[in-house]
Image (cartoon, rainbow, N blue to C red; front, side, top):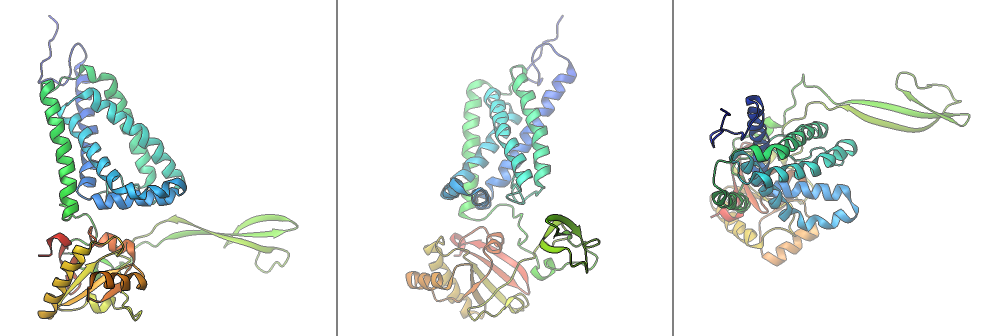
Length: 381
């Protein structure tokens, strides 16, 4: 008698047991990657927004006008990935799940190939800040997963579902709501899991140390000289030193291999008098509140007002309080006039500020260079 499969079996109808196992593993593996990718984006919607901004600005042209849509696109992307991933693992509406996975990879694979070749951004952001891989590694990863998606797209009619059709639609709606809710919560507060270098418990000075034995960047420098109308490239070892017949034209330097980079390598604070006060802040034995507002034009005025109350309380207990921004002096003065805040402003690189905390404004509490706590402005009370 022919073997009859049941709902506990991943595969329906005639076929080898090994093929059934392959389908089950493909569903689980592809779904797990989508879930992981969607989850790390969902808990850090601002991080994904910054990455979309990087892409649009790097591509330039018409793409640069799309930056206002970066935030909704970040929410859409994380929810889509989570939904596809959970649908594959739970076998919900596999016709649409496998088609969605294949179309998603069909778009992302050539895109990541272009990014690997042109290198407009150093990190594609596929897994947020949780896992950073090279652009070429991302492309080769996508080649593997688009093959898995195509494999499942062909065989999905033979995969047994876990749930009845009506329940599948209900569960899909729950998955979508869960993805949107997760992003909304982490946007209103802070990421549930902090993958950034400036997480609570990190000592900033220690994280900035580069070991003496660490590898350094390796560069190839070439010199272009011209003689009798013919140009030729030379290296440091063979360039025509002392030969006046060769005329220098240009010099090119290419990074061959990136050396060790400290987890925190770009932290500095400059006060209104253009004095570097980084060490004074980091080695303060008392408490220092750092109010992070990377862009005052985008900062919440309600959050700025709450920070003013926090500033007054900090002064009462003898704690230091500094607002860090990348905005210009003109913007700072305009912000003061508009909001009435009185706390001091200092300058820090905008990328650093975005990396310190996913809030605008947000507060970081530091003591002796160690991060003691981080809060979104909604949680200042």
